[in-house]
Amino acid sequence: VRHALRPSSFSLITLIGINLGRLIGGTVIVEYLFSLPGLGQLVVSSITSRDLITVQGVVVFVAVVYVALNMLVDVSYTWLDPRVRKAGA
Image (tube, rainbow, N blue to C red; front, side):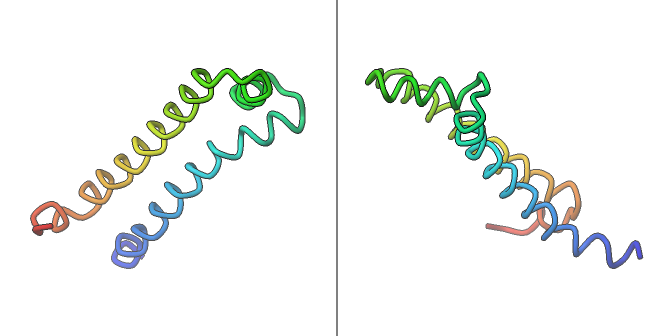
């Protein structure tokens, strides 16, 4: 089990990273649909009032979090398999 778990975990970590990115983007829609206070409601109210600075700020924030999650996934590859760290790009 130990020998099969390590190589198969790369796919699992990749899917977790992608799904976390989708989850962050989906919160905007869910918060608006269910009238929950948060970034989703802030973005929708900013769009309707044409407050572009706030919309840009939220978009940049979500993009930075998405990139940070992808970087965390890439770093976790080197933690799982040291051969990835030694291999060239």
